[in-house]
Image 1 (tube, each protein chain N blue to C red):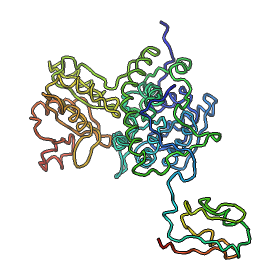
Image 2: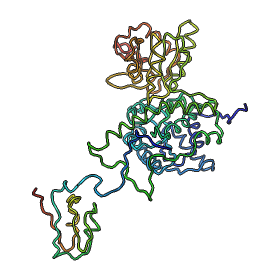
Image 3: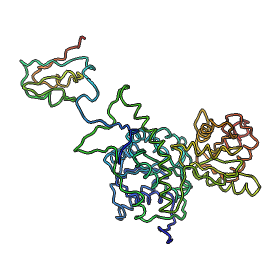
Image 4: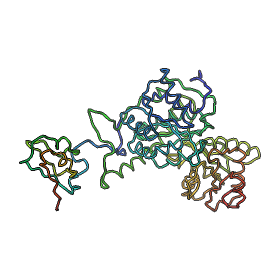
Length: 404
Length: 87
């Protein structure tokens, strides 16, 4: 078979912009923020050069960006925006409104630490803090995944069994500013995979006026509408599989809600997402050379959370090392909490040890991951501690039990 | 493409009183003295809830009038008084 597409050496920001061009997005209200600004610039360049036709709206804030995206999507066209960190936090209120209105808006989130203090580096706190907004969240580990998953997620989001917005999450700088070879799909193939968006449920039409989000009393259908969002999320798991199969058929690249690496015979499985998970692949290979049966489960889809898949794969292991790059203050690592909860109904549960590492972009190498794996081998797993890995000596020397 | 029953949307058709009879929110009600009314229709024009009906003379739809008092304030003939609701 003749190889399809065209290879380019680009970073994930550029890859996201290519996805937006290929998806023939019609309206892009967008506000720049480091490290996402390049997405803004490249899309603008595509439009200026006539490579894509879209309404590009220079808004005055991220809150306005999402509000304008809601307006555009309500008018019935494919809509996209991108942000990071404080920008995403500023959108929070409107994110709920987008999901509640059942608008399949697409967004790239370049995961960056939240302040204070100011920090522009890789950290998942921004996206994890939007967990309950009704947005689907997909974490990627390469520029290729950034491009492909935007196309896949539009197909999922616009499906009439889902109709929910999505964010594709990619690590600041490690992905957003690092160049790697990316296959840019052919427009014909993308058009076939992702036909023009035609809202199946509702849109703004002067000839057929509707009110969206009008006041609802407790005895009216508020609760039913919240339930309906959950139905959309439930369906999204199935629809994701269908979309990923179709994508594989056309483009030859396979995507899954959870990506497994050497888990079949693994006694010890590492769980992580984003680029930390790709680094964990290196740790798995290195530890397997020493005869340790280690595997990796990379969480792609964080919302809806792939409970069944996670449970099936992890139930065979003896020990789990969960590494979070964000934190839920007052409890622990968010991924670890999800995994614990997914395993609760099993008769025999593997030991789970939770770690937080790499906050604010602090480097986490495969050597660090190996150390966490070895630590969790020794740990009894009876307590609910989330261990803080890689803190500085002046904190470590204080002797607090969670600091390692 | 059929939509399933699981899709419950926050969409409503514009209709009179979509939020129920908002007249029950009223504390003061506008009472028009037709002897003084000059039929300038300023009250009809400025009522934010469209509850002044343009019949032969302006009439208040008390089912939906929230009693904001804009009509009484604007009336150049001082034909509208705000009277406290007793029941």
